[in-house]
Image 1 (cartoon, rainbow, N blue to C red):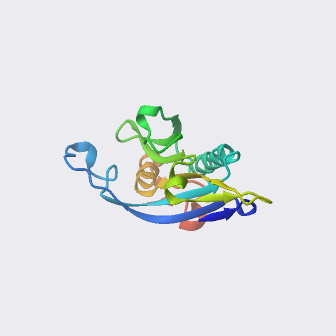
Image 2 (cartoon, rainbow, N blue to C red; image 1 turned 90 degrees about the vertical axis):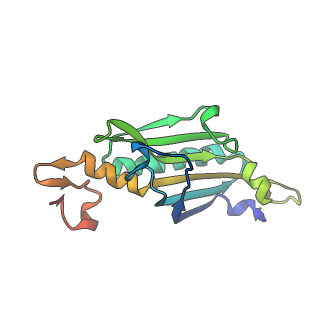
Image 3 (cartoon, rainbow, N blue to C red; image 1 turned 90 degrees about the horizontal axis):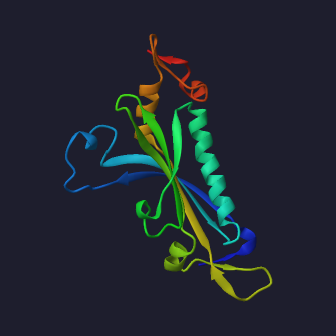
Length: 180
């Protein structure tokens, strides 16, 4: 695939069903909403030029952080070290929300810049304006939010005497401020 430089960055978003198999995983931390074998999430993907991919990565990070702010959830952002990233990523940040019930932080999003690794495997190239030569694109992706953990965090962190207080951003969609 060859993409004209004028068409970049390409931005895509998808709602995906995810499946995971974790052989040999037993115990309390693999049950409930923490480690579902089937779950839904929203993916954000970009294809960009090498010189703009760092800026695209920052924009994607800001987008995910904006979602967590609108949901009024306690969160933190971690930059992963090389040993914690997949070998395909050049840089990766995880977003975690606090689980009041478990007393610990749970990952709800991960945003990575893969530089040319995925583009090389996909044969995804850029043709610069006025040139016949092509070069590898940069690819980036992130899970905007892992939905089951977000639901759990909303339920755990928003309990009040009347029920579950909804963040202001969700009130128009739910038609109420409190779930009783």
